[in-house]
Length: 164
Image (cartoon, rainbow, N blue to C red; front, side, top):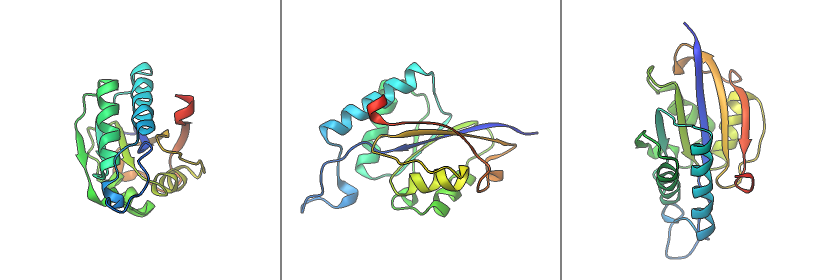
């Protein structure tokens, strides 16, 4: 029996610039990035979006983004950190999606570009740019997540931080 499954993609908020003392993985959010993450959290709260599952890159900027978003939006779901999301190809991100269990009807993946843009394009055939802190929504009419295939998603919307 098919049902609507909802996937949200969130690119981490704006990090500090690359420095000689930090690796790319270790870069934290900038002040502007923290403000962006708070805006995403407020948007989720206002729209009553509360995913059943959150899967995030463990990179510092992604971790900080989802921690701020969860706090501002009062999200119930805990966060599962998946190291393969960092610098992941769209095929790898698709594998993360396929591994989601059946009780989950709404999931949020927090990651990086170009992966977020590429996954949206793979699943919906729509191209949209993901500035830092961009949130996108797509839906699938499937019985389980492992039935999600390339092009099977319906693009619903995309919100950039300036619009939050």
